[in-house]
Length: 193
Image (tube, rainbow, N blue to C red; front, side, top):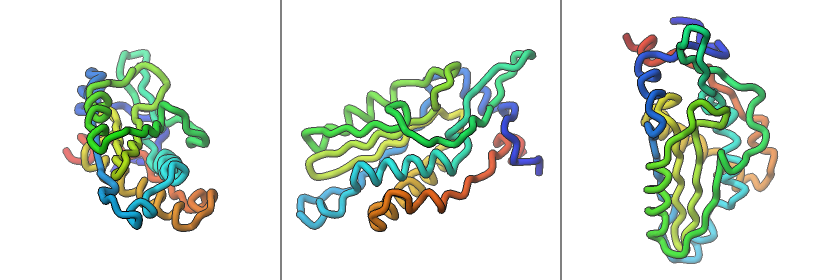
């Protein structure tokens, strides 16, 4: 297998195709709680726990820190930006409160139909945490050129595991020492074909 610790690489065929379509967005949605009991409300994740989870995935998964650039030969490349994410802003995470438990559907629809500016140095991913009266919904959205649908479930699992761990430990710095960054993988056509 090719060296997987590179800080930049040429896009593969499928990634290059996806990169030509700014609206090629993958949206993964998870309903986190859905009960009106007080016990369920007490078990809901705090905004701070969600922030910790998002910081964790941003630092663990290198493609979340990548941007695209064109070479002198007009080829698209993926570049890993350093340092790792140390502070989140609204382009990474937005926490929204809605008044009804169906209010999340409009937000997911809007986010799923909003593409990314692939020439900019902004992230090509975003997490929206939607807090409803009785249920919370987590939306992890990213451009298809940095990850596929299977990767989305891994991101959600890592985010929720870190957020839950942070909430249970009740300390802000508990997860920082546990981040094991994954290597930047070659394109799918290099791995599979």
